Image (tube, helix red, strand yellow):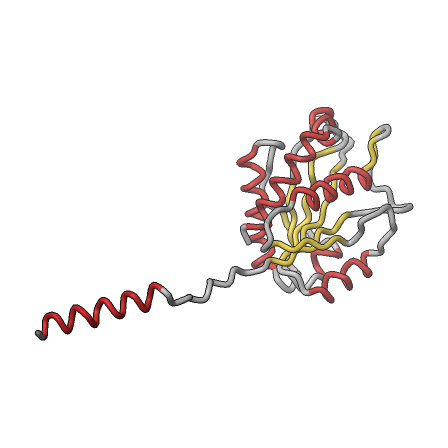
Length: 205
C-alpha cells in the first residue's frame, strides 16, 4: 500500500508540473547608438563623386532595414544629411545611456596602397576596458567575414570615444583612397554585407 501511495503522489506531482507555467527567461535588451559621422556641410573625405557622409548614411540605413533581432534596439545620431556637432552627438549618447556606441567612418590616405578596416577605442574613455573588448569583437567579426583586410585594434582619443559614458568604438570602413576598398564601399551588395556584419558584432555584446 505504501508503494502504491508513493506512486500516486509522484503521478500527482508530475501532472501538476505539466500544467505549471514557468516564467520565461528575460533576454537582455542591447541598446545601441550608431553614430553616423559627418553630415551637412561636414562632408568627410571624398573621392570623385563618392562622399564619406553619404556612404556611412547608406550603411546605417541598411543596418536599420536589416536589423531583425528584437533584443537589439538601434538609435542613430542622424538619419538625414544634417550637421550634428560632436558635442551634440555625445549629449545624445549620454542621455540615452546605451550599452554600445558604434561610430561609422571611412578612412583616407595620400598613399593609395593603404587599405583595410581599422577599429579604434579611447584609452581615456570612462569605459575604456569594455570599449577595447568591443573593438576586438567588431574587428574579429569583420575579419571572419573577410570583406576588408583588417589590422590590430588601435587607441585614439577621438572626441566621441573619449567623452561617451558607454563603451564606444569608431570603425573606419576601409580607405576611400584605395581602389579596392572604394569598389567595395560603392557596391550596394557589399554595403549590405558590411551592415550585416556590424549587426552581428553588436548583437554579441
